[in-house]
Every structure is written in structure tokens, then in C-alpha cells.
Image: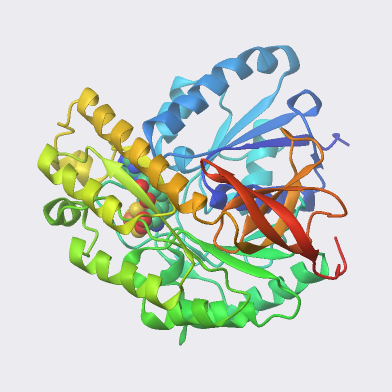
Length: 446
Ligand code: SAM
Ligand code: SF4
């Protein structure tokens, strides 16, 4: 009988990919394959890829180049998974000898057959790329890597079709998991010792299963006994009814942090992006969140240099950021993606130097705002979840406030998974420094 292969999986991109890799491990282990900790121990290397910006592609092409030698010397089998596989099948299979097969995000149940075929056991295709309207991988038990946080996808796909975004093409239409299945999984996670659950979806707050909407699901998950913290990512501002804001405000376990991707501040650009809200509507939503969740964290995503965005229109993004004072922001240069509406209909006409000017300016602005907001927290008491030991500061722990701020705390008597009250004694850039006041009694740890 042929020896079962050892699989090594490398993950790129968003949290959804981290979760998908956990599903893939489970599917491979279910077939009796081994799970390797390093490439050296592996017979099969899987790269779970991202396609959101050009830089994500370049990383994978670079990695494939570096794997060439191992492939020749060890006879390694190499598979490409995820969004880039879905989007660039021909280029990957025809243009790169190292690649034996590709599998898109809805095809992971077929992976063992692809792997076997690539290794010459049985016959099968070298690509599985069908997008599904129903696949949620229910019944697959992710093999998680431990720690205090568990990722949990509650919906997959996206129906929004923002014109810059490749996600609807790589991950298909929206579909949501049965809420009872989600609640049962959260109960099991608590039993395994996880303290925090992060609900995931490409457009997580458009979750809908029968009559259950995202706000209902959040309350149901928050009600699970023993779950200390519930987070979610990534949402769209269009699906933020006041019921969701109130659920977060009222429920002690639902973290007081909302990531609200703005993308741009000018109405013409927002319309071209097909974001379905205006500058004024976004301001109003942010004001409601701030009013109902005082002290909560508000963070965002910004794209600079969307096709045809003028310098004056960009200024509206900057003004909005100055006015709303986000706690932090991910800021990106527009990156044209093959197949999107923007790529087909608009010229990527903002010069690279101008995109650079805008991003440098916004990064500096946000850095200043983040620094000022955090400085004002010195002297306050914050409740943190102790996440892990700090690599850079031996003896210290990395913790998070409810509002999602990284807080470094001396480790005396603490262990990962503790909830502790700390006094903020200092702040440096995006990081807070705290002194423990108390640690809540230790529950069972996993
Ligand atoms: N679903 C979320 C939403 O509606 O805002 C966004 C999820 S997307 C995976 C994460 C972020 O990547 C987006 O908010 C956007 O800022 C950025 N992004 C997506 N496509 C991009 C592109 N073509 N160029 C630059 N940034 C992009
Ligand atoms: Fe992409 Fe988010 Fe828009 Fe969906 S809602 S198309 S994931 S940016």
C-alpha cells in the first residue's frame, strides 16, 4: 500500500484564509494524510493564496520560484488553493511547471482526490474551481492551531460587487450557515478552552439564515456560557442597522470594536465604487456608533487613487479621517484586479507617484490620530484579554482591550487566556502599556 503523504499548508491573506486552511487540514487528516510542521517534512505543499491586491500575487510567484528546487530534489507535489487559484487557473497551471493542481475556495472537499491524482494514485483532474451557492463546509471540523481566539466562518461569498473588488469572483455568492450549528460550534470551542470567537465572512454582517439576521446571531453567540469575547470581521457599512449596534452596546461579551470600511470620502468616487452609501450617511452611522457605544474602537479601510479620483476628491477622504478620528486604519493604494468592473470600464489613471503621495499623507495622519487617542488613555483602567507571550519583550504578554488595542503587560502571574484589569501607564504609537490591577479568577484553560 502507498504511504500516505504529509501535507504542509502555507497561508496568505485574510483571516478567512486562516480559517479555510484549518478546514483543509481537517479534510486532509480525514483522508489519513499526515500534517507536517515544515516544508522539509512535507510530500505535498499547499499555498492558500490571496488575490485582493497585486502584491498578494507577487508574493506567491516569488514563493513558487523558491519552491522550484525542493520540487525537483524531493519530488514535492505543489497545489495552489484560494482566491488566486480561482482567478488565475490558466496562468498558474500553464505558466508554472511547479504547480501540479489548483483548487478554489469552494472545492476543498475534492482536495484529497486532486492530491492523489497529482501523486499518480488514481486518475483525476488538476483543477477544482466550481463556485458553489451552498457550500459552507458544515460538518467539517477545523483543525485549529490553539491560542485564545478561534476563527469561525458564519457566511461565505459576497453579493455586493464593489467595482474594485475581486472577492465576488473568487468566492462566489453569499450563503450563511445555520445559526444553531454556529452556536453548537461555539459551545464546543468554549469546552476546548477558547476564550474568544471571531465570526468571519467576506461581508459578515449581511449574514442571513431564514429569519435570523446578523444582530440575532451575535446575541445568540454572546449568550453562550463561558465565551468571554465575540468579535467579527469584515462588515460592510450598508448592513449596519441600529439593532446590531444596540446588540453590541448591550451585550457584555460582544466586543466594543467596529471595523467600518470607508474606502473613500467623495460621493462620486463612492458611487463609482458602488459602495451604496454617501459621505453624509457614513458620518451619520459613525456618529450613531460613537453615541451608542461610548469608548468603543472604530477602525476602517481606505483606498487611495481609485480610477479618476482627483486630488480634490481625495481631500474629502482626508477630511473625513480628520473629522471621524478612527482608532486605526488600513490604507491601500488602488490595485487593478482582473475581471472586476473597475478593470473593465475604468482606466487606472491616477499616477503611481500620486497614489504614493496620498497614502504617505494618510498613513502619517492616522499615525498621529492613533497616537493622540492612545495617549489620552494613559491613566485609565482597561479590561484586557491576555493573548500570548511577547516575542520581542521576554516576560511580557500581548493583550487586547475590548476596543481592540494591543496592550503590553508584564507577565507576573498571568497566563494566556486570563482576563485582567490593567491601568494604562504609557502609550507608544499604536501600542498601550499596562500594569495589572487584578486578574479575574482563572477558568478552565485549553
Ligand atoms: N468586505 C469588506 C468591505 O466591504 O469593505 C472588505 C473586505 S476586503 C477583503 C478588505 C479591504 O481590501 C477592503 O476594505 C479594501 O479597502 C481593500 N481592497 C479590496 N480590493 C482592493 C483593490 N482592488 N485595491 C486596493 N485595495 C483593495
Ligand atoms: Fe469586496 Fe467587501 Fe465589496 Fe464584497 S463588500 S465586493 S468583499 S469590498
